[in-house]
Length: 615
Image (cartoon, rainbow, N blue to C red; front, side, top):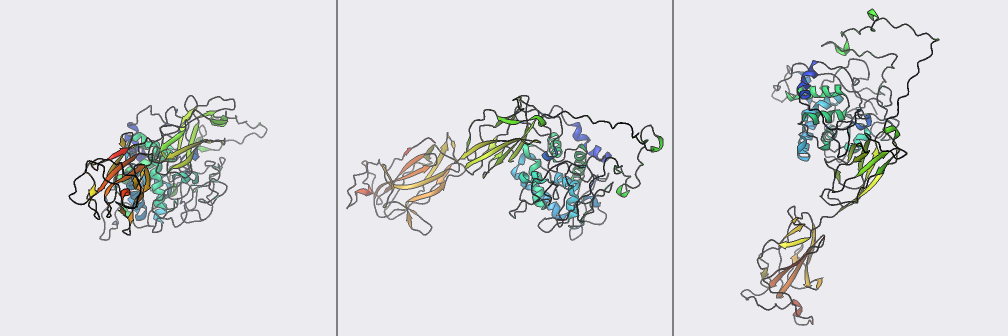
């Protein structure tokens, strides 16, 4: 697989006045005392923020390197266009975004506006991240469906100059079965893409190399934990969770502000890819493994460039070593001197976690579509059972389920509080019933996780009632003027999407389907007296198809039953037109000649009887 990530820079490069101007207002409005974990994420109940930055594996990119080029000091205005819709020549090139890439950013914004309206995700934020991560997919080098022409791979995350992240995808995404690498136009590491990946172009695949898929995944990633990106504090947290660097934050904010002030579409493949200040990688489209950064003994030049000087040329000279005018080299060490010993750092809290212990988590059960009222609690402990605060615990939903955590994601990281307990976000059941697993793991340490079984049961109703009280009757061989309409409730609230069946039964005591009297019609127009696979609408209403009558007269019973056991029996009367209602029970069709069934004891046709059963 060819490696293609352009001439990119290592994170941590110095920013210019542009970044300071762009984020000044944001910084000024940030209130102190925000409760957040080490990634800037809001913590769950009982959790305590961690002071350290998140581990690379907890970010979208693995804290890989990125383009540090900043936008011009002069922001663009909306560009004039030619007759064919292309920008004219005097438009700043930095403001142009390749057509397919820009379409992906805007499509993702539109989908998030519906899926997570409270997030307020602007497409300009996606564009800013796409700019610093890959130069908008290498200047828009993508196919018509948005897939990069050449795979875009970040550096090998082998701990040499970058994070140390061992392989998690068996090389499926990054073609490296030893270490992970960031992949695609938005530079997701495989372990993050595994849960954050989305299908943005509707082809049934979740491909990090596709700009539509990657842009939508980035939007969902930035919108998790209920963050509102219109809020300065949440915006900063979201960006830092993508790459835990203040310089990265300032660079992204600068580009976002730049794009907000104007941009335009340019043809795919014609975008400008940011230049570098130090030679640290192949140019776009070249093959091979990313060169590793220089060793500490021979640092690569990383000085700020003068405006207009390419690749760092013409920049200020590197200052000399303090106390050594002219920047002379330090004297060679005396070989007879003993080598200084490196102090052994004390183990972190994560290093001494021995296991996770459940903290009285109740049985996890919810109906489809409902929120789980129970919460998962796990405590991080040492081998001797001592509780450990400020340990990151990751909760992952696995199994064939559409249940998610609050915020719509299937993974959540929570920091343990003073008591060592991490409380997972609330679970929201989907429509798929059955059992699934939530696994709790310690981030940054390999210890046996905890598995929690959870069950989603079908939607139920505990009561049924007709929405009207008009008697239901018709002449023999005719059709009933009114359709039967019912309302299902559960604990007095509307019970939507509840399964139900309707049967024309023989009698109150015999639930067998009748063979005479009223009937429904199937798709071929043939009589049917049992309907299955019925379901109430979102408001709990169930409207049955039209009913018809054969030549048999009498009073008949229609019984409707829902999941959960709610039952309602409705009377149907078939009599010649003009026949007055008898105060006595009408003869049952079972009293027809040739039968020996006892007379029906059904009430008068003017009443409707119903019974309910608790779910």
